[in-house]
Image (cartoon, rainbow, N blue to C red):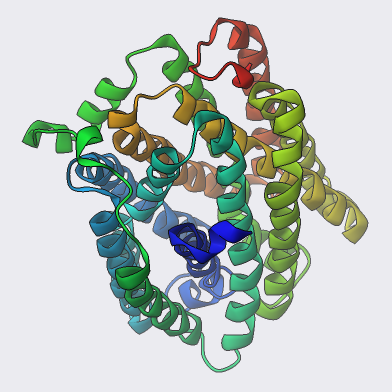
Length: 401
């Protein structure tokens, strides 16, 4: 754990705080939205989607900027934008203010691609998946802590979790200013700035130049569509089906974070070392699909045992998939393109976070199990696609295969 004493410690802590901030509002957002509309599931999905849409627009551009000016300024600027977004959402008062808070957060979401590019700058190809797993474990710890803090702070007021997240994020900005050195050497920076490359679609065109990258990005898109369909309305699901309040929802999501911490912080590194990224990716997709299908059985059974089994399966599956896929993408990318590639990768997730909540919200109103059965079906299609094409993929690091 010596890496935690250096800049990698700040990167891991920032990933932790990102996910803590993201999930701290999950236990309260249905109740905040319920003040303004009776269509809670739909508007929770819309608010989530708008944040993701603007993350899609800004992510590749900020990744590109980090290839030019370095990772450090982009990370610090993005963290500060997140502080502003939390404060605006916490002030609330109207639906449009809630939308504005998520839009600001989305526009300033360049820290995650810059941090993943930071890892690619510092570590060798065969080490990257392990460190991406550590970042994922930090995210899992944040996912575990955020809902618990949100549920407890909600006893003060529904806005309190947002202001807590803003304060902690501001402390992190100050820490990063002193603790984070630049990782991208001048020799590896993109030498010229082109305004047209701020266009996210231009960035995708620049990144998706190989068959391998097109396959990996499409697979990521399919996986995150399925995952976000579950994530975006899970608090509504627990509220409606099991009649849970913010505290119980927060405890449940903390359990998810604990499992994710184990999966990404301990399990994935050992499995990738033994089997490689591609087999681990396959297992991750399969476990996630089984878990999603099992969640869909909960409304008809009312069984907490089935719910917990489902959560364990899909959380371990996601914990295996994300570090392995990030390693594959980084190992297929040249050093000078790491920032824009990671930005494009995060934007693929943003597109998923824009589309999936809308689809999930519509399916949920037709029947609570439908988003979860649909997620399982999408993942099985993605797994079949990956099995068929994995042998044709090419990487700089042979360990990936």
